[in-house]
Amino acid sequence: MNTKTRTTATAKTTTDFASYLTDYLSVHLPGRVNASPNTVASYRDMFRLFLLFCREERDIPPERLEMRHIDDDLVNAFLEWTEKNRGCGVSTRNQRLAALHAFVRYVQTETPERLLIHQRILAIPFKRTGKPLVPHLTSEALEAVLRLPDGATPTGRRDLTLLVVLYDTGARVQELADLRVRDIRLVEPPTATLTGKGRKVRCVPLMRRTVELLKNYLEEKRLTGAEKADHSLFFNSRREPLTRAGVAYVVSKYAKEVEKEGKVTLPPKVTPHVFRHTKAVHLLQANVNLIYIRDFLGHTSVTTSEIYARADNRMKREALERAYAPSLPNDEPHWAEDENLLSWLRELCR
Image 1 (spheres, rainbow, N blue to C red):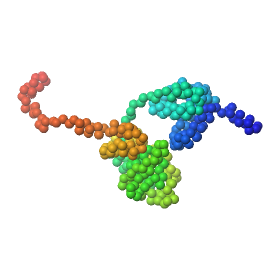
Image 2: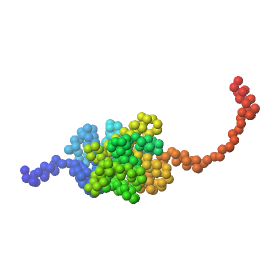
Image 3: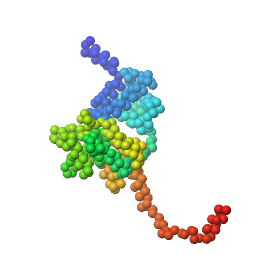
Image 4: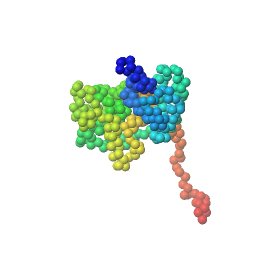
């Protein structure tokens, strides 16, 4: 078979959808948009589910799926399937719709003849969701968790350092897992450099207690030399970097121990992100401006940071007390000395 024949055969067995999706995931997102590997993986998983839906519900195998099959009816059916058959919530449904919208925006510039169909897909609205409460730890609950790691063991010392850094930096779990030794600065001013969503980099200050823990930790783990600069900050017994699941396991382990003690109240589920929420609420309680909290957490808008103002009931109560604090009389009436009132009460009880 010559080159021309092979090319023709390949063209016949490759659908336009397969070509667009391959270029979108392997070239457009990582190369042109500079999306992180986690973002690309999230989009890939969504399309894996979409292909599963087309095969099982529409009898269209992945190798035969073409762009002509994809319209607003198919997308709406897929979204309904994810909710009813897969048991997904509204937020997950909206995330998948956002991924499809992004793909359609990419494709519509390549296929202008399908512009009307693409516009119909882009017009599919996101479902409204209620604003969930922000789970966070009280100061007492945070102290209870941080008291549990056993400082007499290497694992306990690592876990304590991990939990303190997680709280002190307000890092997302992936940001913590991605930390390298070079990202930690322990000389004045001590900081941690975090790489967040969209590969945005921010530096956050480290408190004195956190610096002491990190110094001892780096010396114990022999991570002080220049040749260790690219080594993962937190790792397991096999010196493999801790994953998101590994960090979540450490957090969950100590949260469950606190629950067993029953001395303080914890949110229904304590995850690494709860530590991030906790840091934000504590900053707000310390009267730190929302603008600084936005920058500290790496939010793109201060509107996102406002959820912590809604979450803090103590601050709400104090604000209400400042707004209206009625004066009460110093002396309460001595009703027991009122004979007319006592006579009326005796008649009432007969």
